[in-house]
Image 1: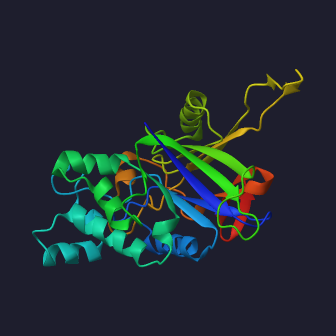
Image 2 (image 1 turned 120 degrees about the vertical axis):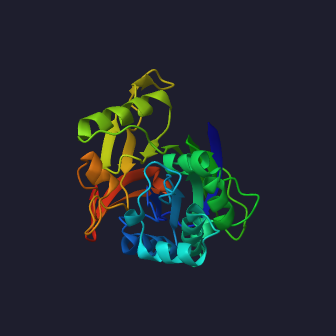
Image 3 (image 1 turned 45 degrees about the horizontal axis):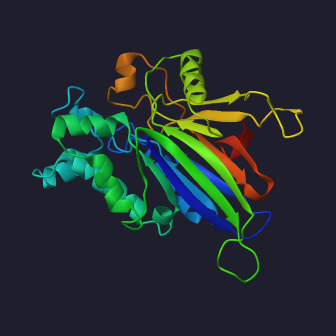
Length: 300
């Protein structure tokens, strides 16, 4: 398990940052909602205080050696590129396309905070001996020195530090820390109760402020109260609640003219238009989870 630390400078006391978890895009699957994925990448790129992280399963990464392989499940653009480049692996073609989309947007690489490995990245290593997790990260990272790889799970420590005066160095005494637990996710379950129990168990295992997970293709949030403690004057104090969420997917559950994996397994359709965003106001020491659907935001 890895721990990453990032210092994020800001100047205004009213500054608000928005953290976008990119969970389960599955680019390279016919069921991937590519226009919605492109809109999400455009939004992060255009947001001057936008930050983002990846929660895994960036591409479908199912090739002809995988027992889940189905030719009808890949999009036309991938079929065409594979036909034109038969010696290039289909996983590599998917990886290169996502890297192209990220690099074509000017600010995305430098706004990236952490990169989690999903089960589809792990599976392509088994079936093709290709490490597309690190390979994709190497293509999009802003510089070789910045540590971004988390693996399956890890802790991301964000230190928001207010700059004062004309100095470029952060001012001492004005740093607020937000600790985030990241995990791609595991297991399944058609109903919300089973996935809520998995999230609650993870929130009980590690001390953090915010817990973000993917994999189950749901948008679901959980608030967990923390143990009551004593302050220096021996008065009872209840710390702020911990927040956790599954952050959805860009993979549609059904498509016209082809069978999907979710359809074959009897899964209910994935959320088609809901995103999870974290609003962070460091000078006030505040953060909240919101969902966005059709332009409307709702606090979780």
